[in-house]
Image (cartoon, rainbow, N blue to C red; front, side, top):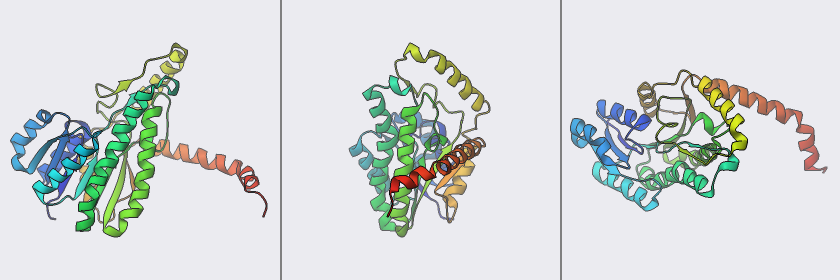
Amino acid sequence: MAPKVWFITGASKGFGREWAIAALERGDKVAATARKTDTLDDLVQKYGDAILPLQLDVNDRDADFAAVKAAHDNFGRLDVVVNNAGYGHFGMVEELSEQDLRDQLETNLFGAVWVTQAALPYLREQKSGHILQVSSIGGISAFPIVGAYHASKWALEGISQALAQEVAEFGIHVTLIEPGGFSTDWAGPSSKHSAELSAYDETRTKVVEQRQTRNAEPGDPAASAAAVLKLVDADEPPLRVFFGSGPIRIAKADYESRLANWEKWQPLAEEAQGSK
């Protein structure tokens, strides 16, 4: 199999770093972006010209287009585009400031869209490519305290499903990766928090306890690397795929509940349509 060229945002840590290393280890080329490129110095020292470190804040649309162009100019093509940059925001919906919500959407949604738009002309021209959108089980289900995060990932899911249909004729694949709990710093130093209202103190305590129970055995980001390589090597990759053992249980319970609810209220739905 011919070596692939990757463009990975948020490559300084977590999934982005592990996937970059896995690609480089097997002889692929990687354009790796980070807010601070010195976090990639050890990879440059080890892999040399196979990695192109690029300073990037994905919130900057012009910079996104410039970074993608620099990667294409350097390596001559793009095969795998990974929109991994993002963070978790914690706050009840009532606690969210306008800036809290806008910042979350700017990074998790708009940053991914801008990088995707920048890459598409190159992928269309070569009539191949694979876009990996790092979503979450929180892209199809939802829990308290992370409403802003859910808003960003649900939006990413919808626009990516539309995108997949738009670009299929050009030989371009789109995959939404939906991880469960993993040992990244998503809820740690990278996360942000809204100012808390005391009215939610009791609810907050319960939700935090539930989250700790749900993520009692988090996944290993390093182990996910082998899975992502299988994804990009697949002839017909899926539109959606879970990472981790937990998401399937959450999805089944959620969708079974939705279907039961829709069925229960179907008479009302038909009433709303009106008679012909």
